[in-house]
Amino acid sequence: MTPSLLQACAAFQEMYANTLRERPEDVLGLDDLDEAIHEARAHLGRAALHVTLTQAKELASAISRVCECGGHLTIKGRPDIEVHSMQGHAEVEGFALRCDRCHRAARPLHEKLHVAGVHHTTLLFERLSADFFLDKGSPQAARRLHEHHGLEVGRTTVLKHAEAQAAEARKFLDEKCLNAIEVEQQRQTQPARIEEVFTQMDSSSGKAVQPLQRPREDDLDEPIERTPVRGLVKTTRPIEGRQVKLLCAQGRGEAAWSYYAYVGEFEDAICPLQGLAATRGWRAGIPAVMTADGDDSIREVAQRAFRPKLHMVLDRPHAIEHIGHVTENAAAYLDAPVAVWAEGAKNLLHTGRVYDLVAMVKDIAARMPEGSKERTKVENAATYFSKRADATHYDAFIKRGWPIASGTVEGGHASIIHPLSKRGSGWLVDNLNGTVGLACVRQNDWWQEFWSWEKTRRASKKYAAAA
Ligand SMILES: [Zn+2]
Image 1 (spheres, rainbow, N blue to C red):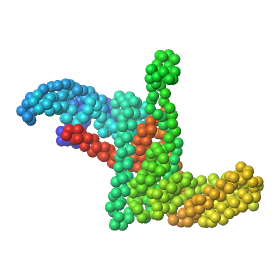
Image 2: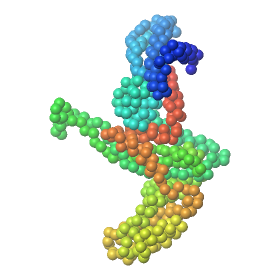
Image 3: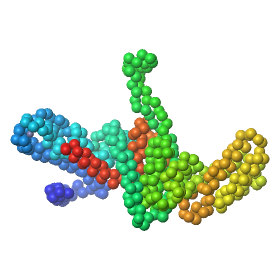
Image 4: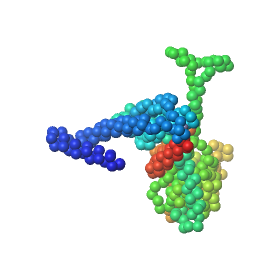
C-alpha cells in the first residue's frame, strides 16, 4: 500500500475504535462482525474508486494544452470510459485532445487510468469472475459477485469475460508447454530432474454448437420458418458432437498431476503431451510410461511423443473387461467355473504370461460354433490381448511403481471437464476449447502465474497501442 493509503487505514481504525468505545452497544459477535466488515469493504471500495476517478479527472484536466511541437491542443470529443472493477462499476466522461499543428491526438484521462478503449476491466475483476464462473457457471457467478462484492453484473457479462479470459488461458497453456520443452532441451547436459514421467490420456464426448445462422429473408430457395408469436425469422443453431481430449502427466515421486485439455483429435496431442511432461521435468531420453485404455491412436501418439523410451500400460479395468468378454460369451467352453477361470486369466496377465492367455482363449474360440457371434467376440478378445501384450505385465509394473489404471485421467474428465462441457445449452467450439484450458490452468496450480502473464500481456498491449 502507498503511504497515503496506510494513513487512511490508520485513521479509519482509530475512528472506528473510538466510535465503538463511545457506543459499546454496537459491539458485535464474530459472525456479525464478519458480515459488517464485508459490507464496509464494499462501501470503502466504491468510495475509493470514486475518489480515484475524480482525482484522475482533475489531474488529466490540468495537463498543459501546449503541444510538444508548440501547437495548441483542443478538445475534439468526450469519449466515455466504463470501468468494471471489484470495487464496482463506474462510468466517467473522458476527453480527447488534438494538436492543431501536428495533429497529435491524446486522451489524457484514458492514459491516466490505463484504459485503452471505452471499456476497462481490472485484472482482479477478471480473475474473480473467471474463478466463480469455473466453479458454478455464469448465473451463480453473477450472484456471487453481487452477494460478496456488491457488484451488479449480468450473467452475460460474466460469460463474455470468462470466454475472453479462456482464450487467453489457451494461449498461456500452449506457450507454457512450448517453453517447458525448450527449457528442458537447454538443460540437456545437466542432470535430469526426474527419473521417469507418467502420463495418461483419454477422450470424452463434448457438445458444441455452430454459430447462430439467421436465414436471409431474400433466400428464396428454402421456405423461411417464423416464430409463432412475433413472426421473427427462426434461427438455427446446429449441434455438433466434438471430442474433448484430456492428457495428464506426473514426474515419478510427485503427488500432483498436471492436466491439458483441448477439443480435437488424438494426433494433435503429440506436442501438448511432450510439453506437459516437460513441465514436470521430462526431456528426450527420459523414459515415459503411458497408462491408457486400449485405443490404438493413443499408443501411436505416445510413440511419436516419447519413442524410443516409451512403456505402454493397458488400464487394468479395461483388461479385466475383456476377460469378461470371454467368460460371458464362452461360459460353457471354459475348463473351470467362470470365477476360477477369470481369476486364472488375470493371474496370467499379472505374471507376464499374456501369450499363454492368448493361446488359451484361441483354444476356447476354436471349440465354439464357427461363424457365431459369440465366437467372434472371443476371438476378438484374443487379438486384443496379443496386440497389447507388452502392456499387461501388471506385477512387474507394480514393482516398478507404475500406475496400472488410468483413473487419474478418467476422474479428471468427470471432475474438471464434464462440469464445463455438459453445462448449459452448448458451446461454440472455440469457447469450449478455451474454457477447458482455463480449467486446466487452475487445476494445475498455474492460476497465479497465468494472471501475472496476463498482466504483462495487457501492459505490453497498452505500450504497443501508445507507441
Ligand atoms: Zn503538436
